[in-house]
Amino acid sequence: MKSVLNDPTLEALLNRLYDQDDSQTPEIERNFSLLSQTDGSQPLLDAAAKSFLANKFVALDRDKAEFCYAICRSIGARRIVEAGTSYGVSTLHLAAAVRDTCAAHGGRGMVIGTEYEPEKVRVANQYFAEAGLADFIDLREGDLRESLQDVGGTVDFMLVDIWTPMARPALELIAPHLREGAVVVCDNTAPGRNDYRDYFDFLRAPLNGFRTMTLPFKGGLEFSIKVR
Image (cartoon, rainbow, N blue to C red; front, side, top):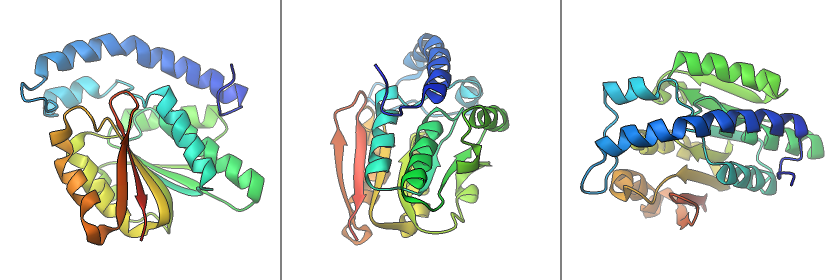
């Protein structure tokens, strides 16, 4: 069955990348099960954990990524921000949405991604070129608190798929640029919900103008709309 992307070349690449992601899952689960906290919170991302994850995909689940594509198409998203690109699996879905929106309605668009690991940036850019989507992606290397300071205009959609302590700083940076009706999606908000307390506090503060709900994907997917 075809995916919502309807792009055989892109789908073949994504199948290959998801196979690599799947091959790493047992090792990741073993590693973090040893570090999990008894209170249900997620393990701290210390130096050893960062080193372990430096070459891991940790990709957004396929159904979630396709959902993000569909949402971006439905709202006509042209300027998208992604906090936590890794090897660019979710980025490819977002860029495909921007490409398809521009093809259907004209104009230009861009996905602004950010990734801390230099090698992941290098490899992700190769995948973007292979998919023919490089012109729709601006991948920035470094700490997102610096790399997302300037996003160049109004933002229609944001994906937050990064270690929990960085979720709120990422949203705080982008929130002033979100248009009315913009959507923010944050992954894995159900387990270790306490770790997202600061993120939820920001979403629920009346002055910030969000409405939010947790969608029943595996691990939970927080779906938030900027209403003002």
